[in-house]
Length: 289
Image (cartoon, rainbow, N blue to C red; front, side, top):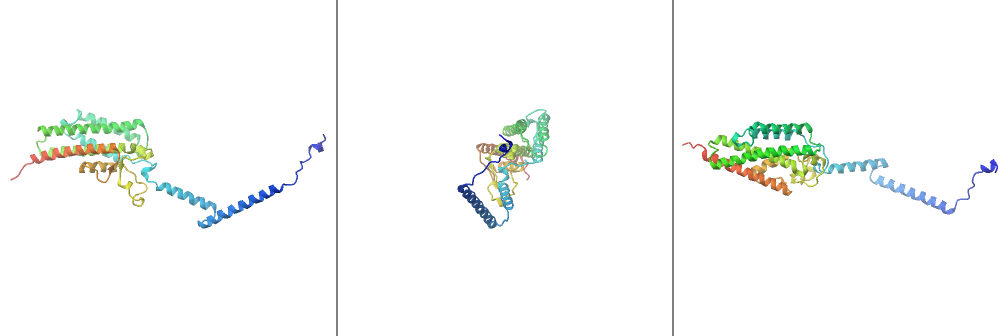
């Protein structure tokens, strides 16, 4: 075979009419699609496909922001409100008379609670957004210690009043009863805060769907609620205070059985404390002629 034979270009035959017709039909369809897109963009008031994509992306972002903060991932709530409230609760608990305290010497329990508090603050100093089983257990241990000590104080106070061994003067009795009542508010605020939708970290991450408490903001129209609102510790402190004062729910409704049981127990403790302390104080108040 010669070199000329090796380099001969392949010969193409004439293009079939069916192929030509198919190519022409495809071009017509592309032109029709182009006209339809142009008309749609003109109807929506945009001039280019880039503007249309930008508007659609903005609509998607707006729709994401329309989801309430308590139903999506957030940056986590601030640490200082719960830390300050816990410090007040520990201080109130250490101020009750020695015979009403769970542990002797009293500073031992205070030191243990303070140590737990320091560890929790060090782990999440600014915002509570770090998920850890160990930190979760430490937080629940702190709440349990505060609850156990306050429950002991309530029981000892009630027994002392009934047996007549406590409450000889109205002033100290009212102060002690008030400290125990306020500590009870702090205790249940902690429990509500720790268990609603799995706790503060779970709420920030949006891992739990169903809430244990229904706050008013969850049912109001979106225009009446700030877009970044979500329940924080102050909301649970308010819940615990109103439940202790009214002996029943006010504007925050319990949804889960756990929430209902917790609010019931708090109301019982509050009723016992107020009824015994106030009735005893009224009986021993000095009568002036």
